[in-house]
Each structure stands twice: as structure tokens, then as C-alpha cells.
Image (tube, rainbow, N blue to C red):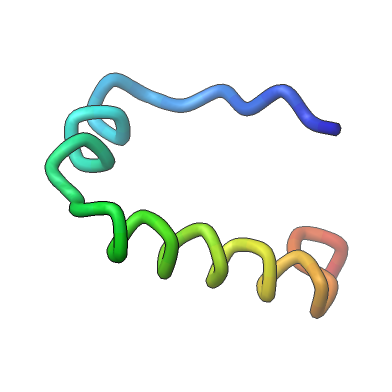
Length: 40
């Protein structure tokens, strides 16, 4: 498991998302890493 670090700006943005939007963003990040993510 990773420890996630993020900016204050990200936290402010994340907090205004509703639960469905947070789930969508999380799923997109998982798909990104499944396809190689930052290893390209």
C-alpha cells in the first residue's frame, strides 16, 4: 500500500466533490496505474 501525499489545493478540490465523483476519480487513477502509469 502507498502513502499518498497531496497538496492543499487538491484537498480543497477533493472535498467539494460528491461521493460519486470521488469514486469516479479514484477508479480513473487505478486504471491509469494498471496501464503502466508513471512507468512509461
